[in-house]
Image 1 (tube, rainbow, N blue to C red):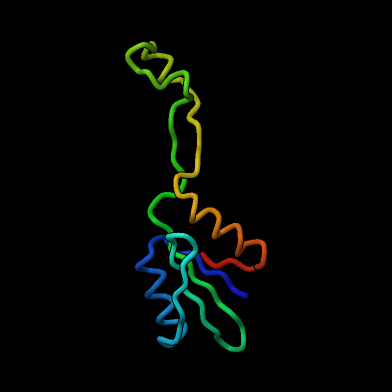
Image 2: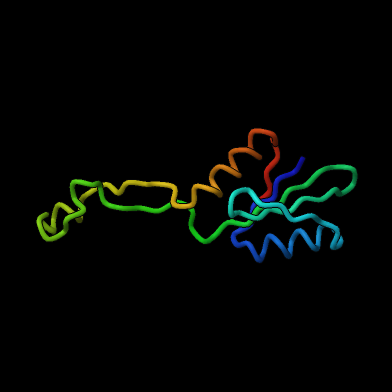
Length: 103
């Protein structure tokens, strides 16, 4: 199986259309659509992201900006977190099954 990851859902739909010659099926994983088809005897899956799926924030102890010195905010290491859990789970599922990813 080949997994194609696109920046946007509309791009994923269009790429699935082009690569499959218009013969793809749409599925949903939670609220996240993905597209599946066969090409040259191989299964393909195309997934579209939704903008940024990873976000940054200040650590919890610095989230009250009015009670934290400004200099402390400037030097604080941001905390990364996945903001689109459905997309994360879908990518994990397909990445386990698939050694080849196309971005």
